[in-house]
Amino acid sequence: MPFGGVDYLLVDSLFSEQERLVRQTARRFVEERVMPVIQHCFREARFPRELVPEMAELGLLGANLEGYGCAGMNNVEYGLIMQELERGDSGIRSFVSVQGALVMYPIHSFGSDGQKEYWLPRLQSGSAIGCFGLTEPGFGSNPAGMLATARRDGSGWVLNGEKTWITNGSISDVAVVWARTEQGIQGFLVETGTPGYTANEIHGKLSMRASVTSSLLFSDCRIPDDNRLPGARGLRSALACLTQARYGIGWGVLGAAMDCYETARQYSVDRKQFDNRPIASHQLVQEKLAWMITEITKGQLLAVHAGRLKDGERLEPAHVSMLKRNNVAMALECSRLSRDLLGANGIMDEYPIMRHLCNLETVKTYEGTDHIHTLVIGEKVTGVAAYR
Image (cartoon, rainbow, N blue to C red; front, side, top):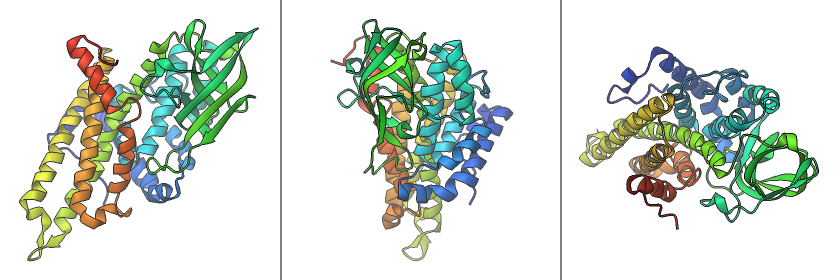
């Protein structure tokens, strides 16, 4: 049955007509184009790249950026897009998040006019795909310890190092790469095909199977100075990009939670057991459904308020940490409770629950682990950093 939304507390009343229209457009795309293929994509560990031009045509790539062909949506509209895409699959939302928040955003915010004019229209149209190279094999939660280097050599730079767990890496046309220089950490644009740059896809994943994940290798990779992001100064610039992506995740996981909840709710109404009564008539089943709808509703309100703060330029990174940490944990628990309500059927891929559960295990880790966001919140309320 077509998805009608999950709205226990009339949260829709907080959205404008335009915001609801944007959500409906994304919802229709997911229903008509993502749902028919995502089961097979997950089975085959294949990203449905054929959907990229359609997502671009709908304005979903870089949706909350201004100019260069971007849709210029507000941040609540952008969040609702992330919600609907992740209701389809975390891998689909992750592609759009990386393209917009981790590739287009740094070029838009820190790039030169030439970089913006060349790359942003291509990335917005989907004719070019980008990736974001920050995480390294030995440095995930502590990116300040990165070993990748960029050394000035004449009129250009020479990059050496490795990045890993990079979404879109081996299908990208350009990588936004962060490396240590004598002047501190800086950002660079490295185009596919540049000598000394290789991207290798990571296989064997049991999560995010409909998403491309790669390792990037740089061996005396020479790029011109024009490929340096001139406005990027220090790790703070890289972390600003992560804040954009984490905001989208906080919205996106609501969609996964909604899909799990609605699947379990409908199943509990239809499934007959014990004197031919629906299992929805049992108290323990209703307790799980009540917990899920309550936590989803709280997550919706948190996301909407964060979106309004972001549109008012009042949203802080520590606020985003609460949004990401709370909503991902909530969505993961919803997927587990839903799996429980479906019994053995919960592990079958004809239902979306196990796919969401597996994906959310990754979402809990990437873009800042649950533990790191806990410490960000702790520092915010105590004034004491506990990272070391």
